[in-house]
Every structure is written in C-alpha cells, then in structure tokens.
Length: 278
Image (cartoon, rainbow, N blue to C red; front, side, top):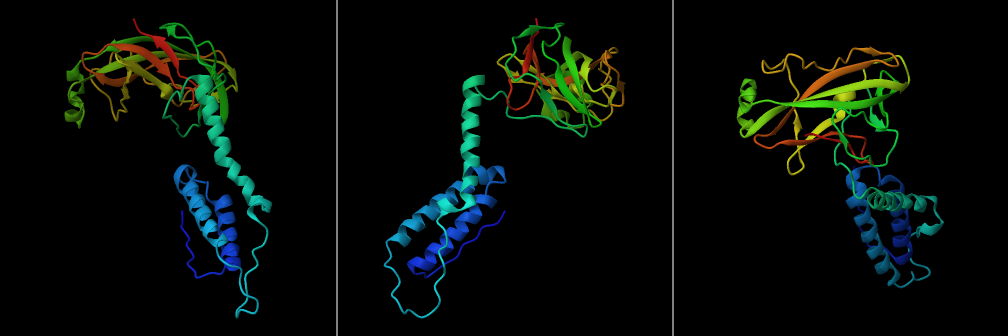
C-alpha cells in the first residue's frame, strides 16, 4: 500500500489534469485490500472531490502565461477506470442482500488449511437437527486437489473436568474453563473419489449456554484425560465413495455451562449447520 500526494501551486487546467490522473489511478489500484476497500480509498476519493471543487473556483489560465500547461485529458466519467468504482458498490449491495436473505452474517471467521477450502452446496439456512441426525445437505470439502461431498453427523458430547487442563503448559489461562469432547461421523457420499486427506472436522464447533462459542483445542501431543474411544481425525486417510470415519475433537468451554449446540461452519455467506445437544 502506498500514498501519493502532489502539492501545487497549480492553475485550474494543470490542477485538473493532475487530479484526473491521480484519481483514475486510485480507481483501479485502490480497492485491493480490505482496509483500502472500506476506508482508505473512499476517503481519498472524497478528498479529491473537495480538491476538485476548489479547482473549479479558480480563474482560467491567462493566455500567454509562461510554461507549458498540462492536458487535462478526458473527464473521469469518460475513462475506463471509473467503472472499477463499481467494485465497492457491488460489494455493499451483495452484503445488504446477504443480510436480508440470511437474517445477518452467519459468521465472522472461517477456517482454512493446506488441504483446501470448505464450502456448502446449499447456502440456505438449515433447520436445527438432533445429535445423531446426518446433515440434510452434503458438505463440500477439498483434499489433495479434489472435492468430496460429505454428510456430517455429530453423535455425542462428553464433558471433561477443569483438572483435565492441568497438563497444558499454559494452564493458568484456562481458569474457569473445562474440556468437552465432540464425537462426529463423516461419510463420503459424492464428488471426487478417491480423495486423500480432507480435513472434514476442521469446521466443527460448539456453543454453550448463552450462545457462547467454544474454543477448539489444538494439541501437540495428547492429554491423558482423552476418552479411550476418542480418536483423532486421520488426515492421511484415502476415502472411497461410501466410506465413513468417526473422530472426536476437544473444545474449551466455560466450566459449569452446558453445551447446547454442535455447529458446522459452511462458509462466510451461509448460516452454520446446528445440532441440539440434550
């Protein structure tokens, strides 16, 4: 990111030429980062509009003035760069449409990994299911350059104890927290097969009472408190169509608060899948 400023003095003709040139460059170079899209470029264009109003108040240059005057060129409305100003307009319009149709943004964060991105094949919100019920729509997950379609079935939640976190090196920051182990089954029902190494479980989440999201615990090594039947996801597995695997993931949640919901993130523009925990 860079900022350019060119000080005068300018006559009306030369000032207009410089203003048009720099504004056109902003139109096609200024949208390509989130901060520029939302803050910096709109502010720059507004500031240039203020400068343009000042230039219009200047008297035309007197004929015979020394020095060569710059050619103002075409107006901004006649330059192709003006059409790139549609980028924030389209983005804002799509955002409003998404909020209206989905009842709000479903999530402010997502997950990605070396195996690829996750997406849903249906952006419509799904009804809340019970544990043990498979997702109504297959979820697309990439692995090794291929895309498989998986049904997701959270099966049960096993609560741990606050003392389970005592084995962690930074255990002090988990005061008032406890562990929860979430068991999930995934089945490859479509898409590319065979497919190797899809991280199906990376988008599993939990909500505790008050819709407070749990924090997924990334372990280096293991905990002695892990239930014997709690298996990690096999990221080296090669899936054939019809294969299903079960795994469980640990989450940190507030101690004393019941887990009410297991979730599955479906992308930034879709409401997550939800399963009620009894």
